[in-house]
Image 1 (cartoon, helix red, strand yellow):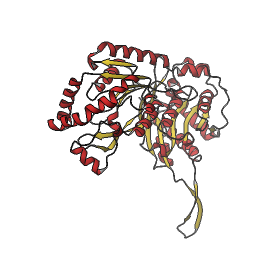
Image 2 (spheres, rainbow, N blue to C red; image 1 turned 180 degrees about the vertical axis):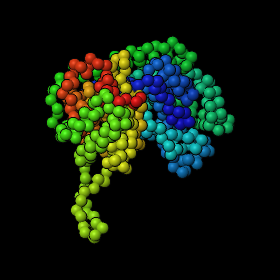
Image 3 (cartoon, rainbow, N blue to C red; image 1 turned 120 degrees about the vertical axis):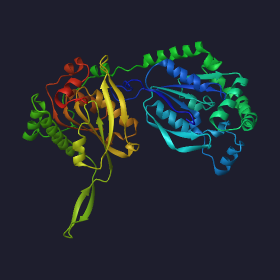
Image 4 (cartoon, helix red, strand yellow; image 1 turned 90 degrees about the vertical axis):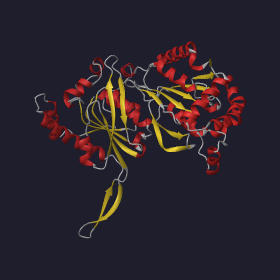
Length: 464
């Protein structure tokens, strides 16, 4: 976002942004346009503050200036390049970023350095925005981008005030001299406003005279957006409870054979009197067996190697990237087992906790490898009860462009209802569990707010 930072309000967990069938509800997009130094960013920040809801981001058009050629960069440093013309913006990259954000995807936003007139090597990752506030002088100029917006705003500020603000900003923040700023304003900024920016006011749903000083207009906009968000609010638990689900185990779920070893380890893990060190040992042992079973579902390729006795052996090799992702509501589940099976696996973490007042899962933290979309992912959790946490974690991976058929969900223990919920929403995700517990019922799972009690009893919590 240029020399400004992408602002994000994330004061609490993100509630479900998708339906029980896995489909996503689009984010709410607000477009804020107006002349240079009209107060667009200040208005956007005030709307963000007044909304007082989590997971809101401000994205600036300043991040999307075109990459200049060497001769163009030379002109820019001489204040002879027109950054205020519509052609200076990379609309294709901008549209792609806003479109992905609106559909819940993770996006890399370029960082632009105004003193160098160039993008830096670093980018800023944005993910999980329920509300996107997009601001820029040409915020309402491009039709494709306008069509993404749910609310379009034009900030109308007096020309003299805009000039005074631009002088102060460019000299103090961007290292330019007075003569250069005035030259750029008269040659490029003012003509661009008259010819291209001012005419876009006809596309605005709301015009805010005087910018940030117009408290009444900003307050009305805030209340309108809050009402729209209330109407869009998701109730995943309710949707799951009212979704017809078969109590049988889905045919594609891999359940480990009920051997004496598996039953013996479950006996130890379920026994409340089991000492902690013994519990940890057998939990890690069981996790290794589960991960080994999941590993058999990964694609291997044939290869021939030479043994130490100079004999050729026709074998198999896994040549893909592998990432393990822990759902942290039950601690770093199965990470030790994964390391024992495949030591080179990278680890990501997703923190999902249940809101005690609503019973809804909430996403609090997400840390994944930058190139996670290029990996096969083993998603590791302690239990599948209602399937709510599993749904959220899989949705997060899909939002980061991990192919659905590259995800394997591994758990110690699962309820049939949760298995069916996940299999119905994401049929190409593979699931591996060491046991399905027939005692758990759909009614029990929904009466208890969340599945924390179930997971805590047998496999501990993050706080243990």
